[in-house]
Length: 61
Image 1 (cartoon, rainbow, N blue to C red):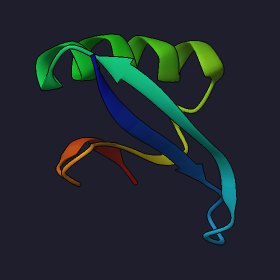
Image 2 (image 1 turned 180 degrees about the vertical axis):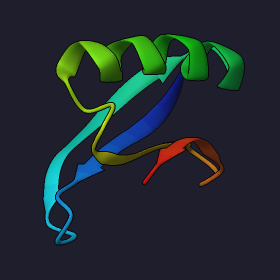
Image 3 (image 1 turned 45 degrees about the vertical axis):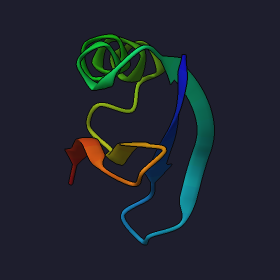
């Protein structure tokens, strides 16, 4: 399992949440991450999910 950092922001740029999630790979992170983001109610907020190398896996403005 590899760590992925999820962050969500207010329109002002203020950080709402920052969590570390673990997935096997980027494909799993994208698929399962989208579901968790929807579940937590952040799909319409600015958010990003990056892998441990800093590569964007998900991004929404």
